[in-house]
Image (cartoon, rainbow, N blue to C red; front, side, top):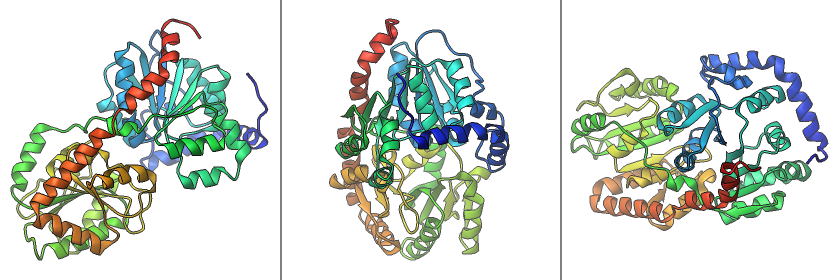
Length: 431
């Protein structure tokens, strides 16, 4: 059913249409910075690289690594039901990780840029029967064109932060027009649901957070055995998904802790693996013996600082340590990263105060006494000293974290139940 288009959305549609001829230059600029896959850039302009399978197809989209991985439990359930599944994402890292973790029967493509001609090409080829978009990935042209083709589009694992709510509240007619085209919003929390309703989403339910249902990340058993032997009884901790500014804090804390724990090993995985050599240079400048995973360096008795600058190996390092600092939360870094994967493996989770993107998750883990906020550099050092000095406390904290994650699962089942009417009609060949 057609409906009036807000002037701002009409302007956006015209502007993005005019930008189409400039897309190759933009994509090449991003490719030179490592943000596009040179072998698959045509997908970003809507040209498919795979054939569409015969039969009903469910399209799921997750913008980046976290959103894509969160969709995996749903993908597995849909594939098990006998449906064709297409998963799209927008980053090179997400494509690499999903290639390893998608079940047989699920396909991956890059999402086209939000340009009408590119989206039309994509939709003409894939002809989805149902579209599921993770969290709050709302692209105006995509949403409009999917709706115009009569394809039900739903937000799953939907969330809307107070900051985003305040921003969208300044343009109520625009966001209202966008949300009115969404068939169903399945929100992570009651607060998310309320914010979506206030902005104009007509059908909203609370289903919980899919990230609690994601299996623990995979790992190579041989690599874990080799590293476990190399670490031995040394005290070790892992700083995961760090951002610029956090590494300097971690290096200084490491240096001071070595005075009390001379065998200390610090492992650090930057959020963007390409920053590994830069961090290694900073560590070497402080006189620390440093090793780089990307160069094939191994942990030796002399290694103090090990940089895990590879992709797809977080499961290995989460299993190697019992204390994990989850980055993008300390110092100037803002927003936080997902702590559920290390928690699922029984690690004690440390984090800085800036975790707005995962506030509810951290609150849940803190209530279970399994996540600890460290306000600054001094607090991080104090927490590490405490856990290294009290192994029994560390074990209790890890167990509490793991049990909390298990309690909060079940979103996959609730989402599948909500989707049941659409899935039944799809498989019966009815609109």
